[in-house]
Image (cartoon, rainbow, N blue to C red; front, top):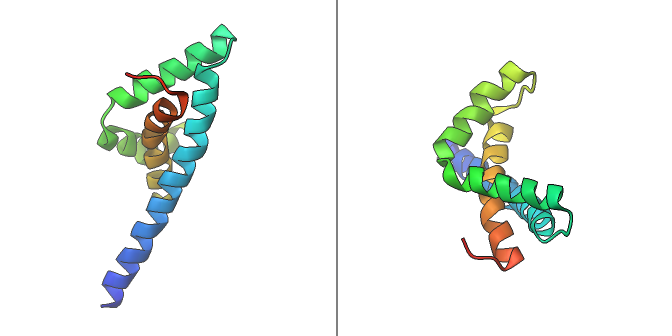
Length: 101
């Protein structure tokens, strides 16, 4: 039973990290897409196109395995939260910005 309770806590932690981070990044992306500055709008659209087009498992593997090779060492929980936030953000940006895919 303690093992299952620990799993529930980890799941809730990942949910909070993914949704909270995705909300923050998504709102920023929506503002960037609606910006009158072409560079910001282009960056926002590119991010949305890339992260909506790649599978979540690829983003998870990248966050956990590739980021340490680039010098960013994260705990498994933080890597998972980062990948979930990066995956959720484009969808929130599309909803917040009022655009359709």
